[in-house]
Image 1 (cartoon, one colour):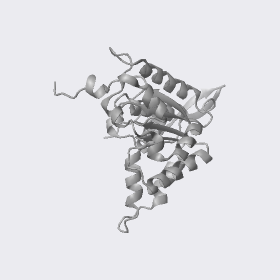
Image 2 (tube, rainbow, N blue to C red; image 1 turned 30 degrees about the vertical axis):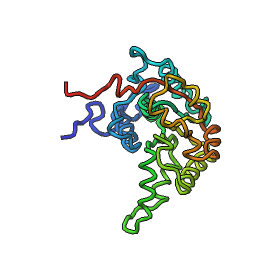
Image 3 (cartoon, one colour; image 1 turned 90 degrees about the vertical axis):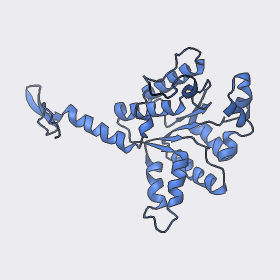
Length: 256
């Protein structure tokens, strides 16, 4: 049985006194239901539903200073949106398991809840698969039907950019998405395990992980094309995060 709000009796409106007059205003429950619908439509995966900026782990023993710096950038981004950010997004790069997706989801959720933005989360590989599936004549969805919400979302989180094997079709699809959002000055938050320049890979030095060393020969430009990487430099503020894989070093799964 659905619980009825005891403030508005389920109508979604409350009658309040303002300057000696009775005025109808939206009840808190109506606002909460609207926010819940917006969060659901954002397609945030269940694995990341718990992620907020408040519970982002950056102060554990041995944590790299860049984690706390990344958390601070994320909070300032939310506080400055949309006037100070002026259509620019964030490019979160760095090692596997340092919480880039956690930060991106935390930002998205706060913008939905506090700013009422229309947000959308997509895993880069999953998005490409959905687009490819539209080429199957037995699938009712169309390429435009999949990409239109991606083009039009006020804030888009594109997770794991560069993770798919680069091909001409992949590059064309990435270009279509990024160019559309660039031209409309829509905010895009991107996470990637690939450095956005060869210099950043070299700068990691002895502290880089095995996964990062395996990527040494490839940058984000290699994965999405140098032209699109250049476009990203205009669209997003780059935030580099280093550190150990949190899932391996701190948050190992157990039945305890």
